[in-house]
Image (cartoon, rainbow, N blue to C red; front, side, top):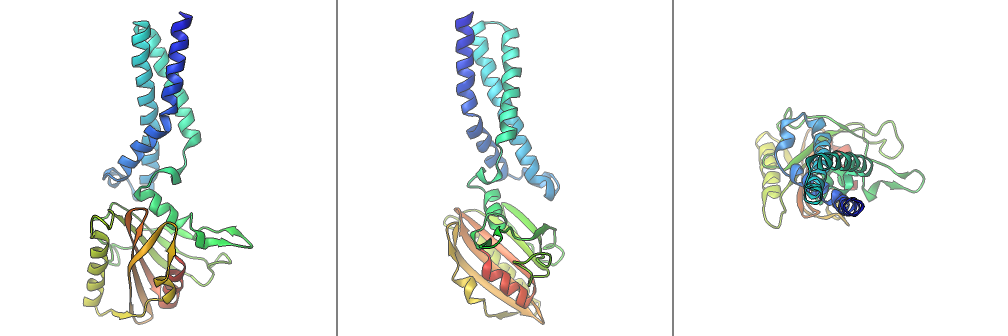
Length: 265
């Protein structure tokens, strides 16, 4: 009996070591699927994380149950092993979850664009996240593209801080597409939006030079354009980021849009 118990414990430990890879694989598959569209936009990331945590714990517990059945040849100890290991796996998942580790994935592209950006490291204040508040707006302004894997929309308002105080209200949308090396969907979406705006009387204007010179560790610029109508401007940028196509849309006062476009990575 002691030998059987020791064997099961050893197998359980080995399977628990697979917990995080299993969880990440599940979350990546969910992240690039259409399941997030079934839930409110502001809850989709939490739903994916929650499903990943529960399902990975269940899978590990189920594998331990199979092993226990092989070892003990009885249902009761196998059921106890399943419940115990599932609980331990669930506990480990909850306390080791880290959004930036979901990837590379569309979620990770968005995360690094908004929260983990080297541009926002200030020598006096340390790492500063973009003052971004979620809000769906592209559909209302007829600027929502098609064919994306994942999106995040909101408004950037830095009036309460010191780093972005000149940006009082720029609408921002981030749309993640398949790899630009395999699919032109990101560039096609940019051109489609540009034509849509031109048909409404918007005129092309100069893209800030700083925006065109951007190169950093997470990607490279593919194409960028800026259009103006009155004192309003729309900046469109397609970049190759972490093997995904990332389309950024900025809308607001021209000077504020130009400033934000110049510092985004």
